[in-house]
Image (tube, rainbow, N blue to C red; front, side, top):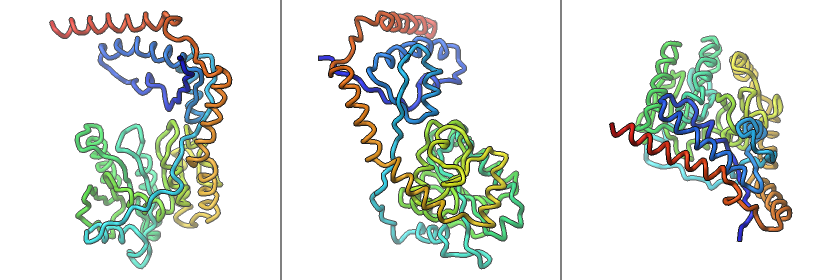
Length: 345
């Protein structure tokens, strides 16, 4: 029995694999890109994670005529509460990041960035925008920029980019420190930028709930979960007007959509004037209504029912009718043999 297939595309693999420079890898990708398009087109229904991805999907796979529907990813609106560890310097560290310890008799105002330490995340934008604030504003408002995210100590790009960001902070006269698990060092109160590698869940939740603003620096992000997590904690988001944030952030209602050159002015306004509490409330309500597990499950159920009704529960004939798929695999086999012979010389 051939059942109908519903394919959920987060982003075309052929685009994620771009930028390879070696000729062998470029040649290697050609048949696989072809096969990806053919096999994806064999699905009885296709959905994508955002309107942005749908546009990218159409450009990447021109042979696929069916227009994908959109089912947004979700966040857990009732996450389990992770206990805070005791008898550890993390406790002092937590107190520092919260508003319990003050510097110059002013509570720290935390501006938060959460991303993996990868160049495509454009974290430098957050640092440069923060550095462009006047020293007077940063000091009078006790501003602290926290850069947190995943960092694999064995990943070359993670290591290199983390070093680049540290050097960038130094060149911009921003005092900084980098902490990694088990966070056995407590930062000083005079700090401008705090880099955190691989933060635990409880600390991430605490940062999201105590920061005055989340800055989301990637451009053309496929979707982006972190802005939803911030809004779930009633924290407004500043992002570039590209990609997924165009759909997850309502400009001037739940956050700010601004090009990079305007980020500093937004940071200045938020530090000096604060943000309307209604912005955080609206953001949380919208996430709970539009991006919960229940909302995603409801949309997915509609798609499943639709594809079953359209196909009468029987998927289209796929393999024997699609001769070009077999040609593609044949080309792959020939290429692998050629590459093996080239490498054996």
